[in-house]
Length: 427
Image 1 (cartoon, rainbow, N blue to C red):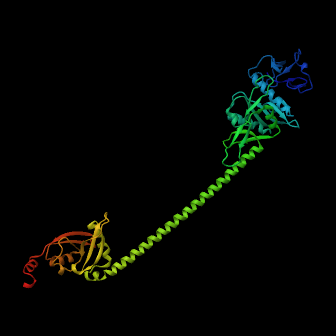
Image 2 (cartoon, rainbow, N blue to C red; image 1 turned 135 degrees about the vertical axis):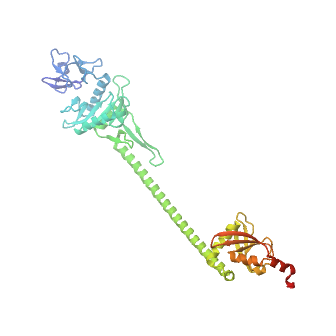
Image 3 (cartoon, rainbow, N blue to C red; image 1 turned 90 degrees about the horizontal axis):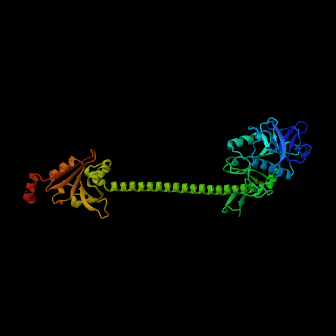
């Protein structure tokens, strides 16, 4: 059943209007025999009647299966009428079941502007519809310059992507239809960043919602997640103010974080520069210590024939051979003017102990300590030690040129032993 019909002479009839929209009375069509009225949708014959609730409408003599007007549900029928009545109560002209000239859309209720041009369609959408279909039908209206508001009775997926309202039936006949979703306000108090802010859907009479929408006191707002609802511009401005405050606070935080990173980078650069200076200082100190050490040992080098160039390699071999931390003492007359070597285990913090003598004078080995190692850089020095040995000696040949180490137990030759047994005064 529908609210409109077509008369062959009077034209379009609207049962929701007192004059049927064409200056005629309801009594001229209701229960009038022989009257030829047609459905504007399918062209089938229709008749005028009033429901048990005195709602005037037109019904098909034979209900066609493919006519939307003929197969409307009672809920859809009543919601259409309520939308039309709400628009008229707000001071607008509204017609039911209006199709475009090209018939690419048919509005349940078409609200007309002051020039009788289609302004906004109010769609009672109770049948299933996909979000993509809702967008397509909304765009179809928009191409003809017509806005649209979809109205449903239940939660539908499409109501989040197109302008819509969700309404409730009145609790009793003659009661008020209520909007309970789709009209929202922005809650934010006090207006500080610490206060929570959110969009809250409000409950209001359907007539008020339609009046606000048609008067443009509310407009479509799209949330950050893409959900669409109706709200007043003051609430949008409040949301924008909150967003601006958040953006400014975020900018301050980013600037503070950037400044913190800059300071950290400066501190790291300063620390790296200090480490570099400390390393350079330590290198200079080591170089100065090495220079002083080499200067201190210049007489030893001259006597032993050891060159400065091989001294570092020889020292490294001493460390490797002993497996200990070492340091050099002075030239010791008591040890044949050899260079004293002190050592200690690397994992201990105890003091250094005398561990060896480098290149002592072979003629001064008469009373050599039994456990003291003699360190020499080559076979020439080993031959000198062997030729002059008067007691058993431990000799380590650490050749810095070849990198080879040889540990030898030297014993006195028979001739030297005989001299020693006879004594120096018996020669």
